[in-house]
Length: 220
Picture 1 (cartoon, helix red, strand yellow):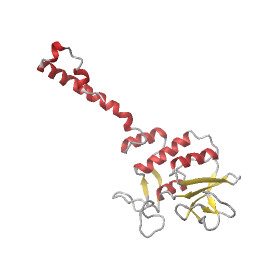
Picture 2 (cartoon, rainbow, N blue to C red):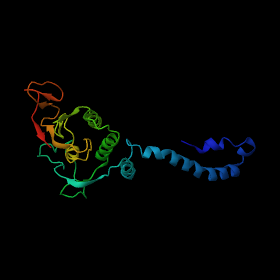
Picture 3 (cartoon, rainbow, N blue to C red):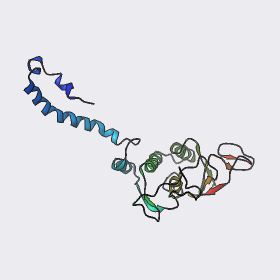
Picture 4 (cartoon, rainbow, N blue to C red):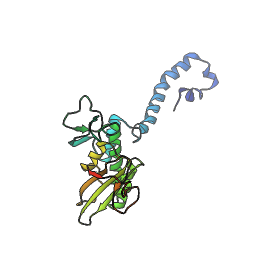
């Protein structure tokens, strides 16, 4: 960060002991120093990890995804007595959010969507890389896998730590564009037990496991 002293130190001894001269230089140079510091801070304001508000909106515009949702996301507001919408899953309804559903994403959720869009922009079209991109935006304890049905359709499975209700709704609504063109997503299935793999006969792993370990999956 630039400081006024960086430039005052360049003044020769012949003039540096003149208070009025130094005050004049300070009055002229300080605004330039302030402008330099503002310009130097601009890249950080638009860094995806730090950007908020309108700066994050601009990042999304560059990437190609909006904060506003085409169709309201329903069933995502926090509730004590509804499974899947408790602490860490449902989101608080803001004072200006419509009761019919969420239409504007908060900064943290929007940041995840932007990361997914960046991945989609660099995607090579393979299912392998789509899984890698999805895993990069989810929590490390959340495991995403895709089943290709070989009929231009696929199923997305999510095991381990259950993502927030908002992110599940975004994924089910097609706002995370990580599928080949023309391929439809039949189901997005998530484990019913937070932290557990989904149930599958004669299997054992972090994604799918058998009796006593795996949990039933439910469509989002």
